[in-house]
Length: 286
Image (tube, rainbow, N blue to C red):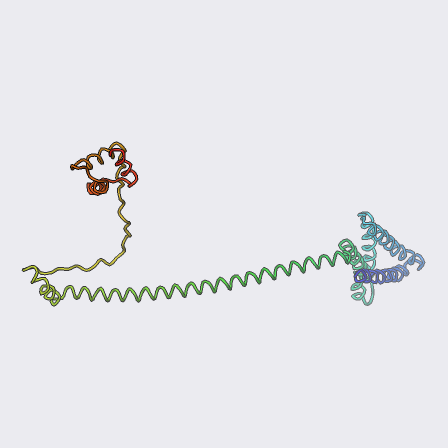
């Protein structure tokens, strides 16, 4: 993966350095001795190559120097300037020379891309771990989507069943209401009819003379449930009162009443007491 970014940068650097040297020698060789033009071209390329090597050394150490980067960009812009000036003053093929004048800047940009790649490069173990995390997240998302779809389908089925049951109940209620309405109408017609009055009169006439039966329709509507009437518990008799009552009933006749006869008259008089208390009172007074 590293070769995919460093090889284009190296190739572009070599091409731009050769092109810069050739242009400087050809362009300045007409005005100054070619040795001087060669020195100038090698100086531009050498300065660019030296700053690039220093930048790569700092990058290998995880460091960065803005001054060195500025010097490198200066040499790159200087080489580009020579190429542009040569293209503008060339007698022929000026467009072709101008088209390749951006090569030094392109080489610097490729090295910048390569440095950015190095800053973000990860080991194989880290990449494998990241892939595993991403795959796990995709699996969880797929399971969640499947669960949501299943829950939605289940809820849709439940709502459909509830709606169908409600519709059936509504139809039964409507049928029942129509049946009751018809029966009510029949009862009302029978009540209002003359034949019904005659029939009832013929039945009640022998029993009560000059009485015509009149009957009302039963009430059809909501009714409230009624509970059993609450029985008011009578207050319990004290032992003294109970003894007095038992003695009065027992001695009401001569000879005195037996326990069984006394108990019957005690309860017939509306008094209330348990069998145990009543027998205890009998023993106390007898």
